[in-house]
Image 1: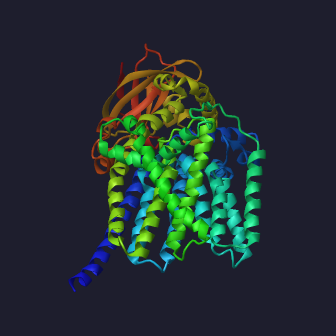
Image 2: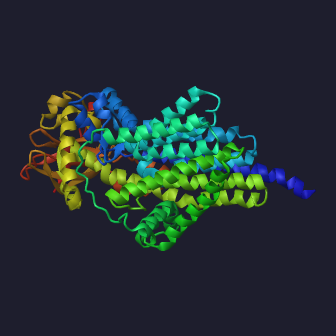
Length: 584
């Protein structure tokens, strides 16, 4: 009798904890993705597209093939952003985040419509989907507006196809819609091509009509032909293969490492200060990937042989997601082995490999719910996985913010000033030297056109007298601080430049976001920008760990050591009366 009383209470506890855990992953993921978002998109090929678009039509620019990827749909978003918002980086971030939310919604719709599983299974599945999509281990993609638009749009098309394919028996319109979203996934990112073998397997298991299967085959061939015939945008990226397709065991091992990469990042977070490189070279990570691959085979193969996806929508969603991500990761492995050399532990691949494990957990929840045996251990295992994944999620908050402050914001400030920082140039690997030089040329073109990170026009202040820019707009703000020259660089006109770093506080303890560097003649010689973190944000969200990095970085163009320089706040186009001398 006591057992019967315990079960409803335990079910309610499972549901409450699943909601709380899911909300924590969702809210923390969104907050820290925004706070640590990438502010400089020169790591991808977006600037190449912008440069091409200046002399070509929208259609020609969107249909380019870049490094074996056709990104027609995300490029359309980027070109619209260029046209209407001058290439605003933040707009792309929000577009990518919106697509991520749509993907999560499309994956959860069939789960909550499933009448064969309990409310506990639905809430746990929601936790798993939220954790898999908003886990900060994926932030190298999800915090980058350009990359997130590409990958999330491909995943969004795939998730919509999973939702619609079961209804193709009833409507030719639905069949056409499935084909349409298949093309959406295919022409968003290269891994989106995995949608076609996935749809064919699902059509086979669902016993769809021969006409539907033939239509899917024709559509897949059409997508492949379009991929082949589209013009290629030239790239200077080095192509070096580390693992040959002639070595199948080596390729299989690397593929298993790719599957096991989320496990390696989770273990590394628990290991603390021990080097990740030691773990990445461990064969046990390949074994974890092999175990995941074996489980996938145990789940998928019987369904293919029986031509049956089951009656549970949770199971069909998990199977569809599993099959799609297996094919997507296989495409990554084959493409990278052939052209670039596969780096299975690269964080960018976690976008897909994390969804592979997400689908396995969803299938485990459904199986435990159906068999009843081991139901509670399976539910508790889902919570255990969430707890195990938390340290990696937590540590990624700090890595994202550190990269934003140390790399992206500093590079943006350098480019606004038309300067190449000597530190950045020296750190560039020799094989990427040509790529770096090409990116710089694109940056100077964007700077001249006031696009992307140059949209505020701060670069236009440089070389003008402060009176010409600010006029009578002066204000006493009680600014105090210190700064000094701590590095060098080279201007885009080959003149010398100096990097200025320091800290400044206003009377109300706020930090000036924009500052100008002025010489003794009143000429603005450079612009400085503060790191995107205030003392309040640092204390509230980062436990005060970035206190030493709260400050500003700027550059002096055409640096003359015989002149004296000062820094003044220039927020809201108002110049502070106070000034901070620049020390050498």
